[in-house]
Length: 398
Image 1 (cartoon, rainbow, N blue to C red):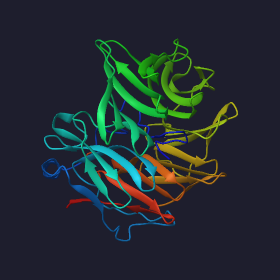
Image 2 (cartoon, rainbow, N blue to C red):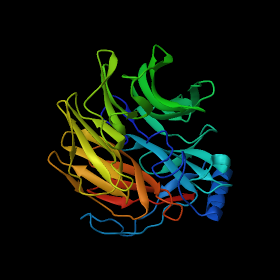
Image 3 (cartoon, rainbow, N blue to C red):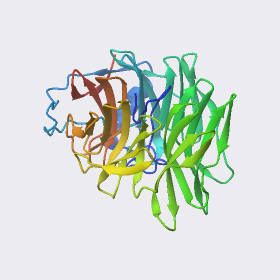
Image 4 (cartoon, rainbow, N blue to C red):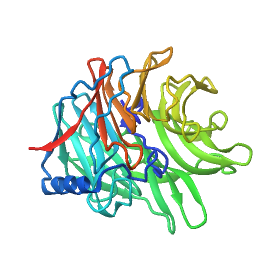
């Protein structure tokens, strides 16, 4: 399942807010040295058939969760989303940079898509647009993804543009996508114009994408950060809002009986990770302040913050079952829920923010992230297998 993926009929990755900032980066930001970025981008573009192969982790694992390591990320690269269909089938999305450092404007960026076949990551053709912000795979042959104002469909062995959503005089950011069947799904996003901005949902049904208004228009909506559908008839989403009584915060909304409704009070935090366990239990993670994170649970109509083993900001959460869940965030934090409490498991890597996590089966998963600042690590991929997290460096080669 996923990080940004959740327990639902389709596997999904959820991105953060309109992806300014991508955690602490711009829409497609990350970190890197300019020279290395240029060399890496040239190599990728000159060799479209190249594959990305994992190298040994050189003893950088920390089974007790307490070891601090400082492996280098991949400079000139920004990972933006990932999702696993099965332990031997997954997708990783991002961009390389030639004229601009990762984290800056995308004037010199080149979006990429790599596919995992169980033994190696291999680059495949990617549409020439902004890097993918979120993806949802229904199967190994059918999937969907979003990037800025565009929705892509994976079918027939290729990613192609399926729909572009445009509003006059507005800039569109599509942030989250979850498909519940080949014929139905949801996208969350935000739009901003010269004087205002608002959040919205797009519903895919009967072959068409149509806009759906969010509940309670008296509270200004800034965007939808995450969606987690349990079935075509029930699901959850995170909406960033502002109201005179509560200020800026996050509202959990519930889809049931064919409509979206507010669930519980406004949460005084910026939440970007969402995973629904059932109609009664939902997990959410994000930032409580500019430097501290938090974990929140919706349980039988009540929302409460629960104890986290780290003060770090968290970005994504996935639920495999009520007793087996993962959350990831800054400092390469990887937290596990065993049905009773959240505990640290794995590595501590300063300067790396894990943005997405995806498990297709218990005991086998991946997490992706980027440097937290312009002078920190570059893009980084972690693999969880045989009870331990390991840094999985990607080498470009033949």
